[in-house]
Length: 276
Image 1 (cartoon, rainbow, N blue to C red):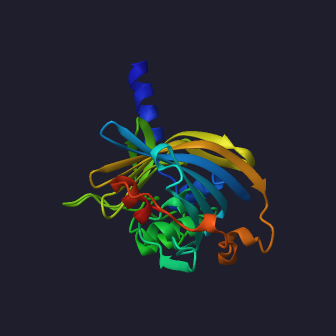
Image 2 (image 1 turned 120 degrees about the vertical axis):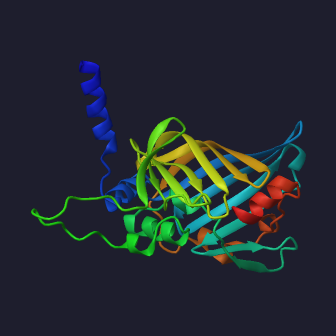
């Protein structure tokens, strides 16, 4: 009898779904503050071979990022260069080093999901990714005491991911899998994202770093027949961004080493064309 009661209490606790704005606010609170230096290794395995690129990121916020590439192993001295991410634009020097190329970032640009620092910006991004409907941008009207009780929106439900209970944000499945983002219930961190094109990002083994940043030590990106793994090597807070920081401006792309030479290995080539 006691076991039955405990099961009912646990089920009721897990069944409660808070306000969507509260969930996204807690998620944004996990994204730290100030500028971060992040080093990670990107690896694509093909048969018995592994091809790796070291990435060094400077992240001011979800709109200002700088990425430096350095090939490792078979890609040493072949892959290099710097990419700037400015809002919805990707900027880099072409391989000749003569001019700055600009292109618009697409739906596979997912790095901002780890650095959205306000509920408003996170909710807007999820609408742009077709995860949540436009009405999710608006807070729910206050319910009267004698009116109907709170009912969670149709795009928010409890689910499981990687053995953990999670908030699943996404429209209910129809004949095809819908774009969905899973936030772990306990820490409100991104554990999985499935895009409209069925590409899947998984993030695991989170750790808390300086200035309140929760960041995954391991990630995987699956797209088509390819899977690319990302391992975090270092995360370090650099404090508040200084006004006019030139490292995030296109004028900083000036040296021959900044000229972008991306990997030609099939899985990595597509990864950098789509996710970077």
